[in-house]
Structures are given as C-alpha cells and as structure tokens.
Image (tube, rainbow, N blue to C red):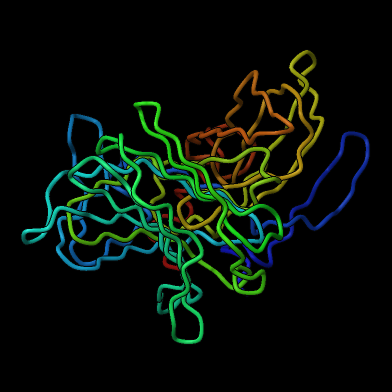
Length: 338
C-alpha cells in the first residue's frame, strides 16, 4: 500500500535540553480547499470547471451529463481518515431527469484511478435525498448502505465520511442548513479492502453539482498542526524542502519543541504528536526568512490549521536579508547548474 506523498521522510524531533530522533508516521495528510485560488492542486476531469458564484468565492462545478470523476492524487488514505465537503445541487438535470448524483469516490490505484468505493448522495427535485454506499469486488458492486429516500432537505448538504482507526466499515453523516441530519454506519466492507484504498476523488452524474470547502484528514486522530507554507517567489514543486517548526514558550521565547517537517508539492505540511498547549510557532525553511505566529493553541483532540508565508532572500541562512546575501546572488548571477 502506498502510505502517502511524504513516505520515506524522517522527522527529527529536538527537545529542549536534549536531542532525540524518532520516525513519526509522516504519511499523514491534512488538506483543505475552498477553491479560493481556483482549485490549486486538483486535476479536473472532463466536464469539470472552476465556478465563481460571487466575488472571491470559487467552487468546483460539473455541468457534465454523464459520469465525471476528478481525482486528487496528493491525498492518501491510511487506516483512519475523514473526508467531507459542502455539496450544492443546482436543480439542473440531464435530459428529462429529475435526479442528480454527487459522490465521494475512492480508488486503489494511483497511476490509473478506477472506482473502488462510491458514497453516493442522490438528490431529487422533490427535495429528497438518498444515500448509498457500495464497493467493487470480484467484478461486482456490493451495497453496504442504502438510506431510502429522506425528505425535507433543500439543494444544499454537507457530506462527511469517516473511517475510525482500523475499522472495517465507514460512517456517513449528512447535515444541511435546515436542521436535517442523517448518520449511519455501513455494514462490513472488509478491513483489508479499505486498507487498499489510496486516493479519494469526486464524482458527478446526471446534473449540475458544486463541491466547496473540501477537507481531508488522514490519519484522523494524529494531526496536531497542519496547513500550507507559502515560499514567496517560488512556484515550483515544494516537496524538495523541509520546514523547521519550533513551538516556543510564549513567556520566554524558548523553543520547547523543534521539528523538521517535509512539505508536499503544494507546500502543505502536517505536524503530528505535538503536545497540547499554547505556543508561539516559528517557521523557517531554506533561504526564506523565519515567520513567528504568536498565541497558537494546539488541542489534544482536534487539529489546528495554520498557514504562513515566508519572505525569500535569506541565502546565507542567518534570518536576515543583507549584503552577504546580495554577494552570494551577484557571485552566481547568470550561471547555470549541471
């Protein structure tokens, strides 16, 4: 099983007053996307587009009239995860139909994604939904949850699917902004089968559907701090870099914990197993200046999202952009690498 985009990296943990090396499960991922930057990181399938309903707001829209899938190749499933999104059905259907289907799709292949598990939300123009979960095994589809039609819901809902650590079933939760709520566990899918899933995606059939505020966490119970580190003036693959993260005592400024955490291609990071508390959090990477965010609370029960942007130019690594940095740049100006 592919464990994640960060597989094989080692995180060095330096404790105040002592040094310790430990290998953390760095394949954990936490990714959120409100598509405010136009869906960076997604590879749209045929028929998909970025839709802007209001200024500054973007969603992923599909206007296709047949099965359309979009896979996120940089999200990886472990033995526990949470996958959720807002879903809006636009009351536009293919042909003379009156039902649209918005789904979470899961694949067991990174190179050629094919559907292994589908969590379907069918919406009817009569303002009713039906939830169905099925998986493909032995060439046949097996249904492990069918809610039947539930009335009293408008075209908006929030879909949340989660797998508890090591369980052989999934939990599906649907809510909306009109006090509608539905929660159910599927019957057994099989631990081995679920362990083989690699990447999640989105699916649309039969109508126009928008996905917004997509959020994914895996493993669901180990993420302490996560977010995106923007390396200013650098737009290429960020997975070449580690970021140093220090948790500092707000009263003294002393580093209580120090971690070196790898970034993924988009600059996303995940810090696991950090002790709960309130810290000033310092970020430093390569030739970028350090950024300190004060008063960050890390909870023992819920991960904290923290995004930072690091200014560039610190070529000599002293956390200051000055004459020595200019000397390095000018000395290598117009040179090419091997």
